[in-house]
Image (cartoon, rainbow over all chains, first blue to last red; front, side, top):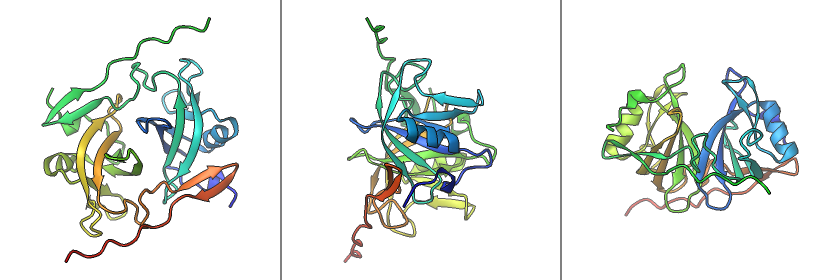
Length: 125
Length: 125
């Protein structure tokens, strides 16, 4: 069946959550939001593209930071109201410089920081 | 730092998305929603507990289906507006009987079903 981005279920703001998972390691990297156009752009370009709620603009992941997400596989859940994108992640996915946004665990009632920021990627020669 | 469920950022309905990931395989199983009480119950009981938006009630995963999620690790993201729970999943996570809710891929513009429902779990002797 041909896929139509309009067949997904979006919230009242026209957005659907998208989970990004590292294609190689299986690590869950981040969760952000897409609108129907961002879904279409992600599939058309192979560059994972979110909708920035704070900036109210397309957010082609890595366009500013260089921390690009290349799409490996695109999944829709049973209720068609959540997406899972498998990606090749360049550098950190998190704006804090950590590989994943999920770097804080709760263990025995305490918050525990599990990751440090990655070393900066040297600029291309 | 002691963790306080009220320190998370909830949406206008008082909910936060929670991604469930299989602790052993790394497979992303599902995404559902928690409110602050569901967060506290999940941490207190070790049984992953969501808030059912359709039923407007706590949803202790597996209480009806037997497809329990035992909490292995609980993570908070950088913006404190998304959760990642690492779980030991009994049987299928998806209400369709599939291991994961993300069983539909979009490849070359077509929807492709990647998983079949699991065999039923025999009732305990």
